[in-house]
Length: 301
Length: 336
Image (cartoon, rainbow over all chains, first blue to last red; front, side, top):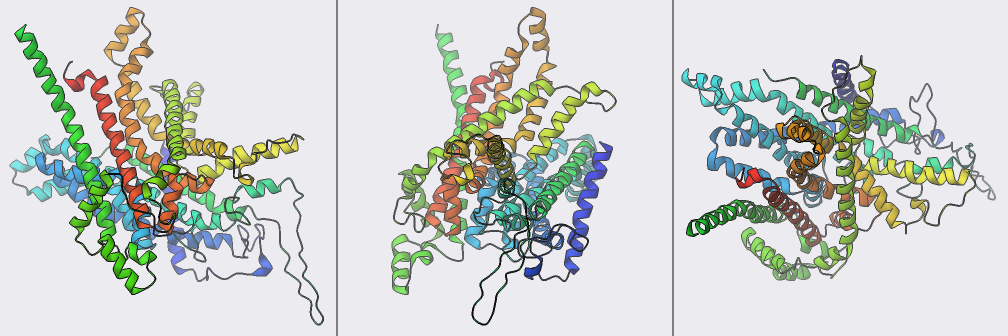
């Protein structure tokens, strides 16, 4: 498990480095090159190019912008809504707790994906709305977990001792209970929320209509942009094509009186254009899972 | 005799009070959820009249007719009063003029099949695996424990995949691979194969959808079942049953039912959300795809109707879970 922990942190570190690099990358995502369509991996293009001649690796790095920033916004939203409410409910108990938990139950009634889609449909498809909606949808889960933890420690010996020493409620609740005894639980939920946001964003971008729109890159729409004719053949078509000889195809145009148009050479489909972002999604989610597991295993102080 | 009647009466009152709480919670949650959905719509930058009105006069007429200028509370009470009679309004764009309830009703069977199949498969598979892996510790130095550890990891790795990727991969591995293999072997595939080139393959699409949705929820169900099974197996009543020579698993299953019920009712929400994705990916004409199309077209009455319906199903699943738990667990009734 020690190795799994290290692997998890390394994977998430790579993600954040990629995100930071993306902030300084100067590569217009809309720039296409018809002379470099579907290039397979080479020294210049680490993962080759896509069907529009754009570098897959660069777009993967830039694609992190689509979900890391809004994902962090989602975490803050859930934290700002769920944590204070749950802390008050756990500390006060009684009818206050019943009322606050009822609010959590009401929001948890909506399937999370449905709530996110509903907010995007009504208020517009922007990364901010997406982040806020995901945070709102996840807040009940975070709130219920924190509520259970605060209730567990509300009458603990050290809390009674702190009260007897005259410490303020804010200090006991904020520091002694939430920071010392619930921070790993909260971080674990935030990591899970980040993973949830990645799933939501890539799903919306891949299915189209919501999420990041072309030409801006997202790991989801990178997978979707590899569709050739039918919008569901993304991953299957290359496999179906293997029945035919895998050759370079040259498409020549027509010649008219005074000029001849020659279409650029079209290479065979570059599988890394779809498998690259797909692998990145899977690896990032694996990193989130391993980090969440680590936080679950390690007991709070 | 009078004493016995008195005791029965008291037990009846206790049971009524026990059932009252989940019933009240059900009604209050449903009212709260419909209020939240109405409020989201009320504070939106546009409204339903924006979607269909082509000129200011029509817009003003529609706003007046649909009561879009009314207060939030007034709009909410009207919505609830109509919804209680099965009237969710009419679709604006997706199926113009058709009552929302009828549009949903025509698409519901496929979605119900998808959700029911996913519940059945995911719980069947998770429970079978949990019976094998529960309570077994894994150690890298003991190779006999590797299969259990590898199974747990495998389940985790499958479950972390986003649903749309799971659906794609299910298609890729099942649909395309079988098609390719059969062609390579010189066989003639059935007319409905491959699914992606044959839109009439609804049954295959449903089967793939069920597989995708259930594979994405394996870990949580498996882990919960494992923990519960480990706890039950260490209980005294299981030791006593074994000592008597009884079959321990029948006792374990009986005690497991309340936990399973809670788990199923809590996962219904995930399965409903999953149908939106799977139906969109696999082109299944169910309620999930209808919701997606309605969101894209800003068909507000349809969006609100489907959201209210989803909330009702989730609330009903919780209520049913609570009632089954009270029925199957004597401790809940205070009998034990």
